[in-house]
Length: 181
Length: 181
DNA sequence: TTATAAAGTATCGACTCGAAACTATATCAG
DNA sequence: CTGATATAGTTTCGAGTCGATACTTTATAA
Image (cartoon, rainbow over all chains, first blue to last red; front, top):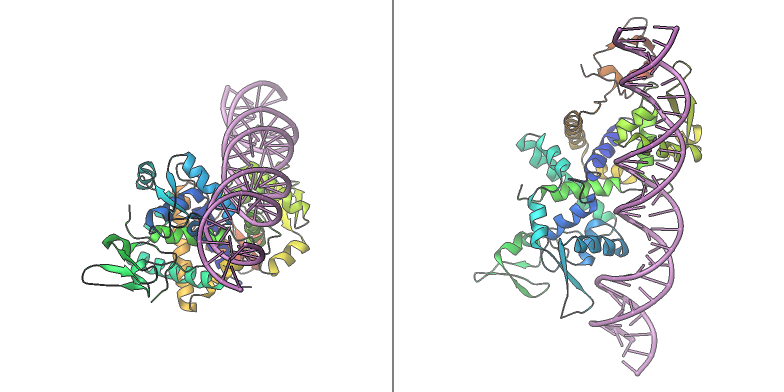
C-alpha cells in the first residue's frame, strides 16, 4: 500500500477522462470505438479488433457496434474470404463526427502540459499500457510500420504476416496483429 | 485535431484504469469513493464532498453511498450542528477493504515506471487534474497543509477558514475547501 | 465426415447514472 | 420574527452499459 495519494490522483484522472461523454450524443465507449476505427488498418477493423481494444466481451462489443451502426456512423460488411468475419468502416458521418473533436476532456488534459512534457507523458502512458496488456495476455497493438512483419520495399511496403501489399498511409495505422520489432 | 494517436492512447489508458473492478466485488466508483473517504478530512467526508470528488450528481452519489452502507463499508451520521449534513466514515470493514489493495490496475500501471519517472508522472497528472477542475469550475481539492487557511502553530495547527484546531495527521488529508497557497 | 474452434449475435439481469421532484434544515432580507 | 430562498440530501424513474450464457454460422483439423 502506497501511502501517498498517487493512486487517488491517478484514479480520479482516469475517471475524468473516461466518463467524458463529449457532446453527450455519444457514450464514452462509442468515442473510443470511433477513434479506433479511425486509426486501425483494415485487418483490425473488426468486432474482434474492437473487442481487444476496448477490453470488452464480444457480446458487449456487438451491442456497441449495433448502436454505432444504427446512428449511421459505422458500416458493416461481411468478409467474402472468411464469411465469419465482419469488416467495419467509418461512414462519412462517422468521419465527420471524429473530425468535430471526439474527446474534449482528454484533449484538454493534454493541453495543460507544455509541449515537451506532453510527448514525454504520452511515452510513459504508452509504456504502461503495453506492460499492462502483456500482463493481461492481451494483444499488443502498435503501428504497422513498427512491426516485425513490416517489410519496406522500393516498389512499396508489404506485410509479411498477412502476405499483402500495403499502401503508404497504412504503415501509420494501428494493427492488432502487430509484433513490435 | 492532433494527428498522432496520443488521444487514443490516453483514452485507452484511462479506460483500462477506470473500468477496473478490482476483485469485482465492488464497482469502480465504489473503490474511488472508499479511497476518498480514506484520505479526506472530517469536513470533506460528506455526500457533498463525494459529489465533487466523483464528479457525479448528488442523486447518484446518494445511491453510491447507499450501496456502500448496505455492504457495511461506510457509516452515516447526521451532523448535530447542521442537521442537513451527513458525515461519512469508513467502518472497520471499509478500512480492511482498502488495505487489501483497492485498484490493482492503477497500482500496476504505476509500477511499470521507474521510481523517478513515477513521481514526475504523478506531478503531471496532478497539474492536469487541477487545470481541468478549475475549467469545470469545480472544487480544487488539495492537502490540508498546502492551504492558505492552514496555520502552523507551536501548540498545534489549525484551520483559519473553519476556525478549528487540527490534529497532526489531519494536515496530510484531502480537503474539499482547500485553497492552494 | 465429423468434431472442434473461431467470429459474431441475441437475450437477460445486474448495475450505473443523470434528471426531476421532493424533504428537511439553514440563512437572509425586510 | 416571518416569509423567501438556498443548501444538503433522498427517492424514483428511465436510459444506457456490460458481462454471462446460449446460440448460429463458417472454418479448420482429425
